[in-house]
Image (cartoon, rainbow, N blue to C red; front, side):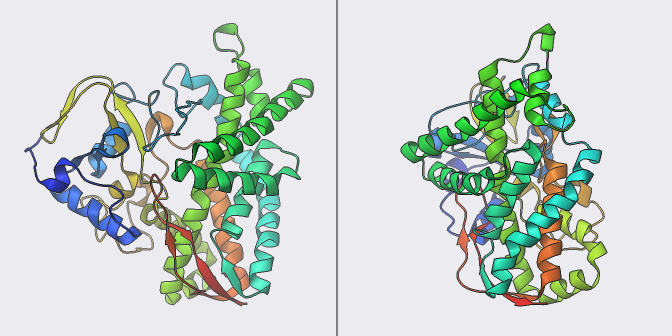
Length: 400
């Protein structure tokens, strides 16, 4: 994996946070794809960034060279904690992933759909009745808490608390505010410990309950360590809370700018699943996840040494013109849309992708069904690393 060497100020030390808006960030990635597909930054302790689709897909599919057990994202959790399965390599990773995958099979997802639709309709009602609000920070932050509550079989009274706690944790994590990160993380750890304690006393069917499924795992004939199970559930509590507000917010920005697409999706709701895949490609909410190389490699003339972190910039790969022609344009029914990397690839591809697809489809179906128009309602706030997209999206909603 080599190519001609590159040079230049942006190439030798690009600043991933110099761009102030989503559009500026995407323009920066386009320049890097063209002239420096393997870029170096000194920010956040120093890291490399892969920006072309082929390189990102290859790295994500090579867990031996690109390992996950050192860093999962850049910037990292300010406390340096690592939780399974995201921060584990095989074989340690495997039982955690197997236990979670068991609870996300098609039959269970189908059973969750009616309850999730009811949650979406109820949480959307206040915004529709008052004619709008911040679709990302209100509906987009609360509805995912109900999705997580249903998946983990939490006590329903925890959903609003989870929404508020996760939102505070996300903001503190972006700001590297150790004190608030610790406070909010400990509250979610307490939720996870309570969940494990309850399932030890009263196990549920392993196909229906992540905590019970983790407790039932016996790799090598021995149960998983209790604190690692708690860590995995703590990760589950927040992992589904970060991306949905950004994705929904970004989609609503696009719909507000393209009223004809709103009209088409209202008139032909059967187009929504394919439209959602194109939205996922365009508005991938994570810039990318991190790996660490286990052996020296050379890629496009750049030498990456063992122990150096590498970010797989999915947001750039999904707009690589070599794979997706006219990459910045929404194309309904794009022929190769299944190739997008919004959920990653390989061993660490998003375990919750079927649940994420269902919940986002339901959110958009209800939003379009309940409105006749979605309009911009004020300035949009852009996310900071490691996310990309719209984190605050005021909208005006005209009732159907």
